[in-house]
Image (cartoon, rainbow, N blue to C red; front, side, top):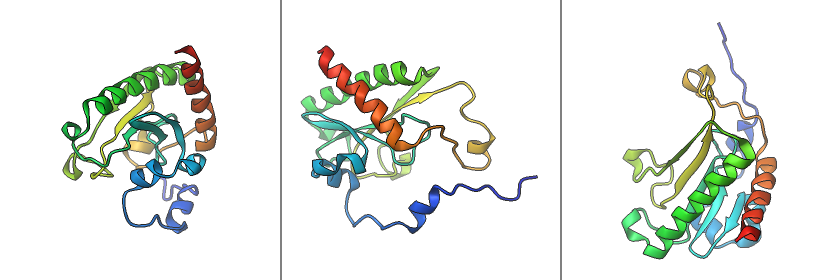
Length: 167
């Protein structure tokens, strides 16, 4: 029987400087000079694509509107259309870079629906592999990621830049 599971990377989260009050997505949206630190993969007209800082799997992205809205119906039609186009591009690039067996795309609208940041709408796009949910996730509530976030950021930025050149 395992008595302890160690995840030292969480120590930075526990002891690190706390984010100031307010919406993290709004801070990211209005601070393009800090995209590397905020793990922004791409900025577009109405949305940006960002890595999830606490991912379920390597490559876990989010498409986030610049507008601080909590409901899909509250964003402009242009923003919603761009969000779906960016999700489509994200799916294609994640498939090319990570070769997953499947994909999850989804939104949790509201705290009771599981939204970690309920006040600012965002669409999760994440690759999945057969067997990626094992006892570590289901029993120990711990995820094992084979790649550090800065590596994931570099790989996906390069893939998205390639997409820009193709258009």
